[in-house]
Amino acid sequence: MKIRLALFVALLLLLPFAGLRLSGSEWSELDTAADLPAYNLPLVFVTLGLLAWAWFTNRMLAVNGGHAPLTTQRRYFGAKALAGSGFGWLLLYLNHYVATWLSLAASDLVSAVLLSLLFAALTPAVLLTRAWLASFPGLLKRFAHLPTLPAARGDSVAFILLAWVLLSLMTCTAWPSYISGMVWLAPLLLLIVLQLLWGESTIFASVPHGDWGRVICAALAGIFVGDLALVTFLLSGGELQHLPNLLFVQLGCALFGLTCLQLGDVVAEAWRGKTRGEVFKKKSFPIPVVVKK
Image (cartoon, rainbow, N blue to C red; front, side, top):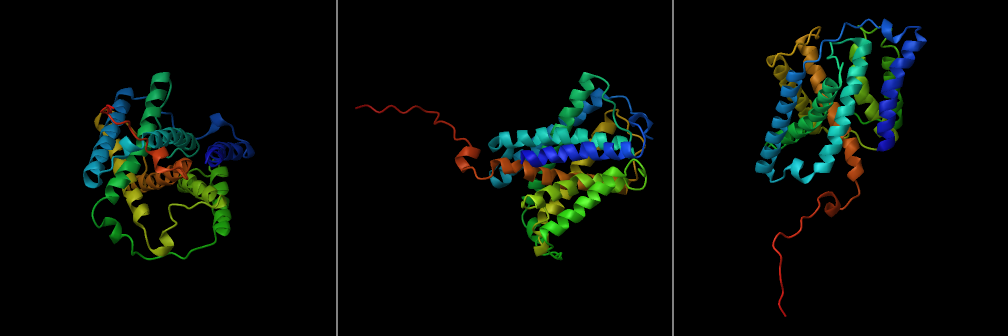
C-alpha cells in the first residue's frame, strides 16, 4: 500500500514537470492566470460545513444500520483524511499546468493550513456520503442489474491505461486547453493501473457483472459534496473565477468521488488481514466486578 501511494505521488509530481522541461519551457512561463487571494474565512466555513455534513451522515448511518464509521473506525478515517489532504495539494499542483480554474493562493502559513484541513475533510465526507446513499433500502439493488461490460485481462488494461497517463501528464504543458480533461482523469487511472499491476481489485471490479452500485453512489457523493463545498464557499464571500461550464464542473465532482473511493480502497488495505478485534478495539468493562471468596 505504501509503495503504491509513493509511486502515485511521485508520478503525478514528476511526469508533468518532465514534460515541461522536455518542451524547453520553465515553471514561470506556464500560461496560468494569477492565483486568487486566500479567502481564509470562507475556507473556515467550507471546512466546518464539510465536518458538519460528515457528522450528519455518520449519525444517519448509525440510525439506519447501527454502525457509525467515524466512531468505530477512527484510525481508518484519520488515514483517509491524511491521504485526502495530500491528494488535494496534488490537484492544485496539476492545475498549475492546465489552469482549469483560478486556484486559491496559499501565500502564508494560515491559508496553507486551512487548505490542508479543507482537503482532509473532503475525502471522508465523500466516502461517508457514499455509504449513506448505499444504506437507502433497495438503492444498491437497482444498480446491481445494469448493463455489463466485457472483462479484460488486467495486464493489457494496465499498460493501455498507463500509456494514457504518460501521454496526458507529459504533454499537458504543450496543449493545456485540449487535454485538460485527460489530465484530471489521470489520477484515477493511475491508481487503477497500480492496483492492477499489484494484482488488487479496483472500484470497477463488479462492473463486468452488471453491478454499478459502488461506482454510481461514489459519483453521486462526489457531486453532492463538491457542490456543497462550492456553494458554501461562494455564499461565505469567496470567489472562484475562470471555472469551466456547469456540466464540466459536475463531471469533475463525479470523477473526484470515484478517485476518493479508489484512494480509500488503497488506504483500507493497511487493515486487510487483521482480525475484527484489531480493527475495532474493545473497550474495557466500565463497571468493576469484585468477587468475594
